[in-house]
Length: 209
Image 1 (cartoon, helix red, strand yellow):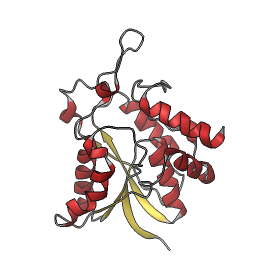
Image 2 (image 1 turned 90 degrees about the vertical axis):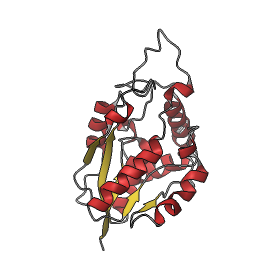
Image 3 (image 1 turned 180 degrees about the vertical axis):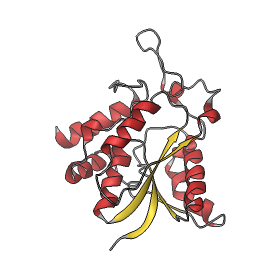
């Protein structure tokens, strides 16, 4: 039996792609929601997302929202692509202020506009990000923050999972792991050295060897 449609925050990365497959397995229809926030890899992420989502009637047309003006003044290396051969890039230079909070806020706006009352996100507890709006405490309180504002509720099925556990789920669900993309440093090819790449590769090695 099909369940009422929900939004899924989707980027073409390992976590959100795995969640798309997991939801399809449970007969949950979804509308993927993709954000162009000015990230240097936006074209790569968009192309990847269009290629890795489950080929299922449960997956509706991707909604693409352009909010890139918000970060047009940002010096983050997620916005301004670095040349690591000529310059060092620290973790703090990959910081995007309030990005997670913005994602949830905008997704709630989109959801309610479409008469959808549920937003799925693939955030996990092994997230290496240092931002307060990526912390377990913030994510645990997220639904309470929105409870008195409107009908939209947030679901994070992977919140208590490690990256390795997500990879194990991806393998079982036959997710095209090799096609997913979530590099922070390069706009077209995984660098293998940024925090996202290291976490991903370590998890895959743990599960697959």
